[in-house]
View 1 (cartoon, rainbow, N blue to C red):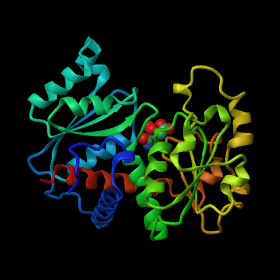
View 2: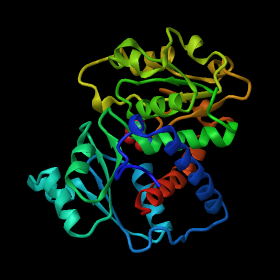
View 3: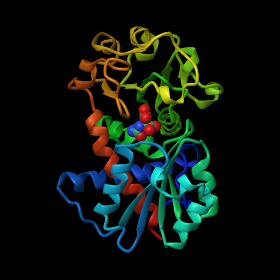
View 4: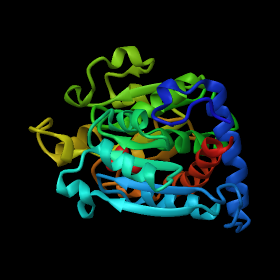
Length: 304
Ligand code: NCD
């Protein structure tokens, strides 16, 4: 069981609860691999996904996770709902409460929007990505993927390279991984490094070599151009040249290193095509972990 009604970010989830979610997700993933797609855990519960931003993996995996555990699952896309008629987030939430919704899964361009919703509804709220703040279920699925590959997270060296400033995934990964005893190296152009990053517990590296050297995990991040107001680097080609990762950069990492990326990937920008398709790339495995982790979160949050 989890101590809070909502899952808003990994910064405020205790280590023991992260362990519980990951252990539960390991079992869920085993069941999925056996082809089990009907569990009773969410029988009688209703789950609504409320997405104010685009999504493929996150929305679909929450929806499948709900359905695989026998919940009634429905989706609201903001562009076709009363949100487009000027309804506030809180009023939308109260409307969903009145329909006896047990869980609302929200993605929103503004950091803190899921927390505001959570304070104003009876339903459990899961943050599926809020602005540049956090994306806890992605952090958990990344940790599950690493834990399954390496056995434990403690002592792992994880290099995160790319647009860290705009990445809610990077924030949740840093909070979760450092809590579990992993070491996180960060490398990005200074314009794409968030202010206050020094207090996050990760190491800020001054070169790609320093970040990747001896790393067990090399994670690329998408350039989130939709969140950039002005030019924060000269061109995409130059970005790839100085901050992208290709096969020769991977040689700097540990000989058993894996490649990860939360998706969607822009081929040839943050990672070369051959790094994306390499045998050591676990990008598709991350997607598998995503369904299992979301099953674990939903089942633990709704357990009384
Ligand atoms: C990420 C997101 O939306 O924050 N994607 C995801 O959920 N898998 C990263 C991104 O959009 O680049």
